[in-house]
Amino acid sequence: MHTPISTLTRRDFLKTSATATAAGALAASYTGVFAAASDTIRVGLVGCGSRGTGAAMNCVLSSPGVEITALADVFEDKAGECLQRLKNDQAGREWSCSQDWKHSAQVKATRDRCFTGFDGYRELLKTDVDLVLLATPPHFRPAYLKAALEAGKHVFMEKPVAVDPVGIRSIIASAELAKQKGLAIVAGTQRRHQNAYTELMKRLHAGAIGEIVAGEAYWNGPCVRTYGFYHERQPGWSAMEYMLRNWYFYSWLSGDHIVEQHVHNLDVVNWAIGAPPVEAVGVGGRQWRVEPQFGNIYDHFGIRYRYANGAVVVSMARQINDTQPLVTEGLIGTKGRASAGRIDGAGAWKWDGPNPNPYEQEHTDLIASIRAGKPLNEARRVAESTLTAIMGRMAAYTGQAVSWDFALKDS
Image (cartoon, rainbow, N blue to C red; front, side, top):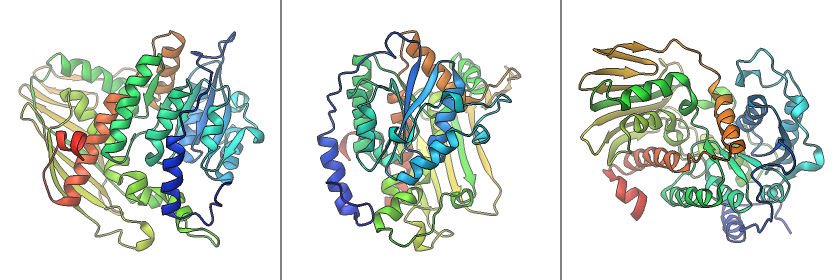
């Protein structure tokens, strides 16, 4: 018997979540690479918010022979809204650059294939889907990834992939499980599938700017409540439901915005340097977004990361309205400087080729790898980039220097 969402407390939820995870081995027998006797790849979406809906649209638009066949969300209304948008070819255009934006014909999910409640994802995993899109709040990612792999499903998972070191260790273990089972895992770090970045990295790794000795990473912008992340409390909502519907503003669900959002920029820096940092020190605070209805996350962070080769990277993440936005990365080497699609110095270069929508390209690459029998596995590297952001948060929250070894192994 399920506890009604309107009466569920956070203590009840954590107990239920732990039980579900322990029981979540999901002895499903389906282990096919994709649908037997068919080139169609059946996709299930877990997490029916705006990004999940967008990811489902990107997935079906990325490749032929892809169908959305099942949905799951804690909330029935979110699953219903998602299905309605997926069936509407006029919805979701913000997620595509394509002029031919028609996805509804590839949406085969129906109301009876919409699974809700905390066990909804488990019901979806029992179906014949080949690929699962994980777009729930980040807190759930480690357990859901493990369950999906144990059920024999390929996975696309949004970033970040965890909110704490325990979750990161779970993701790393799941990366090994996917390798053993021949399953694909692609993460929502779309810059890894964006031509301006991939071509830049080829040059950086070939020594175009020499050894990287310093860098900068920024995600300075407005409060996410400006974009509809905040939902006023409604009659009948428990504290648990309020937090789940406003997950971004609670660090136990989102990891704080340095983890949920700034992970993109930190991933680029780690990619360029070729390894995660060894130490983080930093500051942060909650000075502008102070109202209690906006949870407990900070509104600004300033972190200094140190890498094993001595490189120092300055990181800033801010969510304050009416301020100058800055979202970018920069790298300084012994022979020049680099940023997205550009190198300045002796080997000056600028990307001027095509730039397909990376939100679709990441799915194109994932599906191509499944069909080729050479599954991509991005879990370990996105886990390391997520832990980089978690280290920064830990340093800002505590005022202490946080080492990579402590964050990964001891915390």
